[in-house]
Image 1 (cartoon, rainbow, N blue to C red):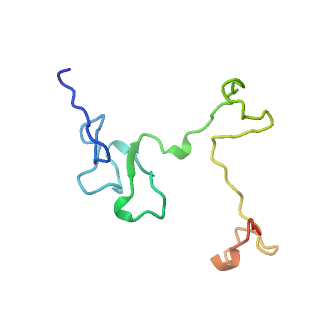
Image 2 (cartoon, rainbow, N blue to C red):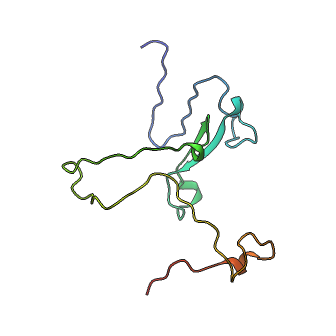
Image 3 (cartoon, rainbow, N blue to C red):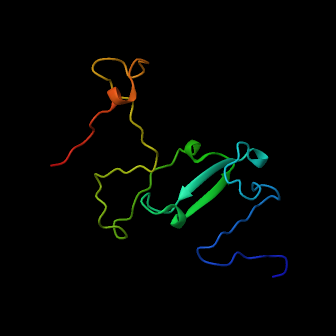
Length: 126
């Protein structure tokens, strides 16, 4: 196949671009303004306890940020393929958010509350 170049290697530093000049210059992973109006996102493939030098990460430059992608539909699972799935379970791939909690009867958007006063126990064990 003439005209194609393939990315080789495992655990290597690879890069490819659909449009010439879409990637930032060397040494700039997260520029303030990306080329072609793209959005920079980083995906980490390592645990947060890993040493910084051994972290695996990927930089993506996307047309739309992943947070605006939504509207995923329901998928009916085949019981023969996944017998462990119970019908009563509803799992959504959408992002789930909690509304701010009230702090001792004050509204959550009150500007007089500092971080320490706003810390709340959500769950405990033992």
